[in-house]
Image (cartoon, rainbow, N blue to C red):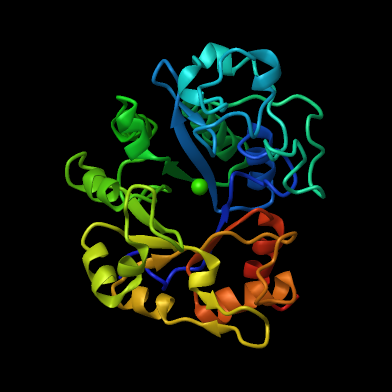
Length: 322
Ligand code: CA
């Protein structure tokens, strides 16, 4: 049985770093997650104007930076600011903030790090890989990486091939095989297949799954079916479903553990659902502890994406006996 299956201890994946405590995808958020015992640190990746992968959740930069104040004339016709329209040198001039809603200007998670405070920058992928390798060396504790190729179909429409840029960088930094501490993830099924077949990626690969159809047409409902999982298992090592695909229902009273984890395990696919948030619990649970118990003990997931890696790691380390 490979290390990618459910036999291994569940992993704690720091979602955008320790994003419950520090602005997402800053090196500071990654350092905190590393210190909190996360097994893997997530990188969402988009390209800059000069074709450099940078660590950002969105193709837009107005949700997490002061770009509108610094480069007011650089928005597109839709009023949005895109990372792809800025060079790395320009992106480095921006101040990163806790995520804000561009329509209201208010923090998305008001209880978290105050928006607009202190000083944070957008890291490039290579800066972040060096940073994590440095922390692994200086602490003697290894955290892996969990890079996501963001919106490859959109990048292609802009004349860019993001996977072809990202994968060689991972390989150059020592992430090459399924034995290396790296999972590559993507929502777009065509790209997942392409990463494996055409681009020859030899490391671990996760198919992310939304609840609706993907922007590129990926049919998540089919991929969650027995036939879909069987097909997926030919190219991927795991799936990253939404929490609602593992714990269904509208309330605590009517919640159910779905068969998804069991079905995926039958095809030797690991299951890493997203996203555990102490300050935004699903309606199907009454507490964070209950969410952890349902995911790890009842459903038997192989890991989770969490904004609060300290609290998820504490649960995993004690087996829920807190
Ligand atoms: Ca992600």
